[in-house]
Image (cartoon, rainbow, N blue to C red; front, side, top):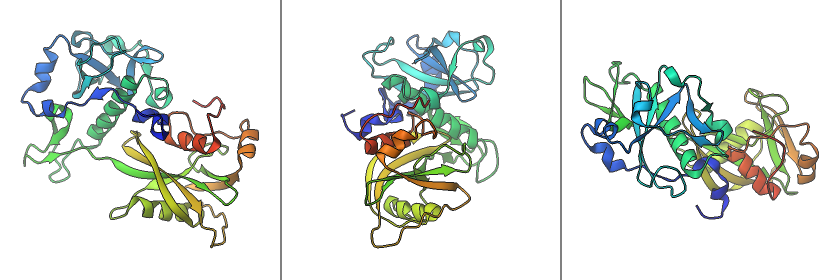
Length: 309
């Protein structure tokens, strides 16, 4: 990944060839399970098995209890990982962790910024597709239980044969600055009262990303913004989002009154760089795995040391 804003986005990193053509082969999961080179990534209740505090555990097929779902994630392209380049990897979703229950399991929100490029890509891919499976157990057309197919990349309605493909929810997130280059941060109703982040929202049907920026910012803050500029994107599988990062400027031709919507956003504040630095002990910022943190640090001019995890 080039040295740019994209290189700051932890969950956009990857060293995995998703090997999509292999998914089309009949009985490919059984074929992969029979291959001694195959490694499994055990997953349990949204966490992944760890071999160390900063590494995923990729284990032989025989080391994992029976899985309720197997998804082919692709082949490793990493030259720095223990497994050889080309190692096939499947996510193994466990209903019962069995003998692995006392092992160490990791959360992507906490580990996304410290895992290797390969492990971050694997964990992000695995969590996203597993979350999709959990929300599509029944056909929206007939209501019957669906079954996985194509190595875990579709679910099939057995009565009609219709294939359901994974979906991702697009959401914009925006670093808004005013004429004095202050940054707007808001406190969400679901967070601690002293946690502040950028404003964000989902893209609606039939809406461009830029239009979503303008609409969402007005809805949540009462502010009019101009010049939305795209920075980069990061998957956010909590449960199924793709975060599209933007900057935008406060419209200088319209009076700017901060008006939190009162439902999602309870407080809005402008911060200069000095003000943000001086209040780091009193306010909480987004964790280092988030694209919000990357956008804030881009504006700030460098890393912010606040102990966030």
